[in-house]
Length: 222
Length: 76
Image (tube, rainbow over all chains, first blue to last red; front, side, top):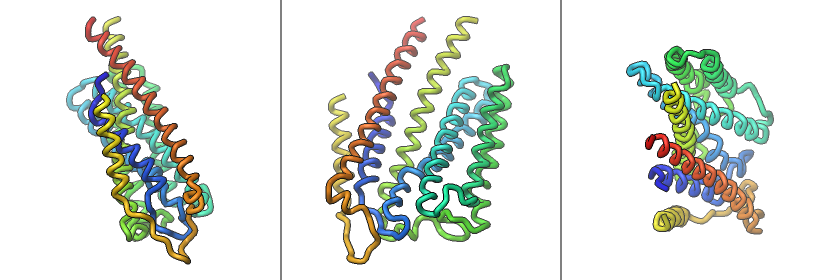
């Protein structure tokens, strides 16, 4: 069985992240304690989501430019896996918040904004499901996906920074740098972002291949 | 396949060996040192790795199935 090289890379990165995520050294911080390790599992969900949605935008633009239905299949698969990552980010974030900020949901600007962003993307799934014409569905969801991404960026990266937020890096604070003065987190965090994102790409890849096969099958039957 | 697995475990081992040991202070915040001194954190780690092995195994199963279908459709 031949498997793409980057899938082996995904497995290597994930094994490294899981082992070092539990056993590696982390800074000793009050309140956070060992939950700082969530940085390797919760935050990569959001980074992964953004990267998967960005990929989806790329394929959406490609669809609009070329009208190739395969690009629509790719764009929608990346959107769906992105939404999965977003929901995992939201639920893991709620659990982490319960034991550090005190509440599952504190109406933190970033919590609210990411919930809204996910709603916008869920509407894309609804939109796709409600259109039966293949070409029409592909065109509309490509346009919607570009629009949704354009809304997502200010919602998650810009608006929360104008107000006070519990999340690090908001209300004028820098990112996780003050938590990582000894540089212990970065050697695991960056591979974690890369590894989890590749996991998402792998899942999307399987989804895409099944749908392309289905597409060929229906074309053969017609 | 076996060579790949070997290189892969070598890579993981090398990366893991590059980390310095944890320093300890008397009045530092509470961490899960007891769990680790008992060695029981490794149980959790092994559990996670087993779950991940299951997920990875499933991904490979899907790879195999889909590759087969792709081959069949291309030959038609």
